[in-house]
Image 1 (cartoon, rainbow, N blue to C red):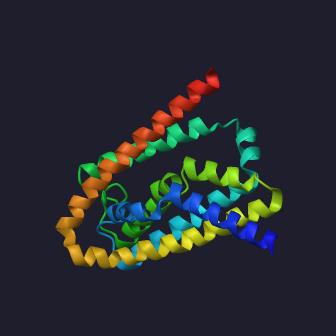
Image 2 (cartoon, rainbow, N blue to C red):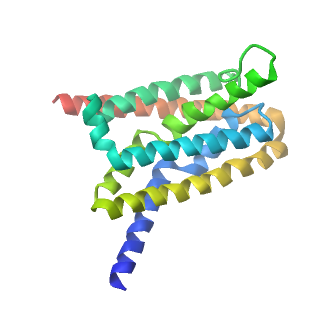
Length: 215
């Protein structure tokens, strides 16, 4: 019984750690800003695709993160800097009120527009917002704590977190209908500022880590 309680406590710790670093509640307004102008069906597809990709990314790094980093000669600071620059660029466009134009084409073809809109699920939602350097590093640390059991607990905990995040993203559609397009434009600019700051902070953290590695 003591062992079961210990495993349950560990699972809760892993879940809360991943929840804190990914922060799905704070990501809801960002999701709404990035999908501004998309219909409900497209929003659901973007949410599902981004979270599925985020889960795959985190699961892969939880299982073979150290091997992947060693194989390609990658470092966590490099991942932070690259991800930070990408997040800053998206935030900069959103800050100018161009959130939807970042991922929508100039053509009026509906099929092309939807495919371009779904592209935001890959970047920046799945990577680096949902499965960012912090989430990857946290998952790798938890998975390496105690062999196969820790690895499985980490993967299952993140799967549950992805399911909860999907529900939060999808329920955000009601929020869009409630506040209207003009208010969503204001939120888009606010989230753009926040994303730009997050990106800058990621770059600062990456540079700091790179200096420590070099030193």
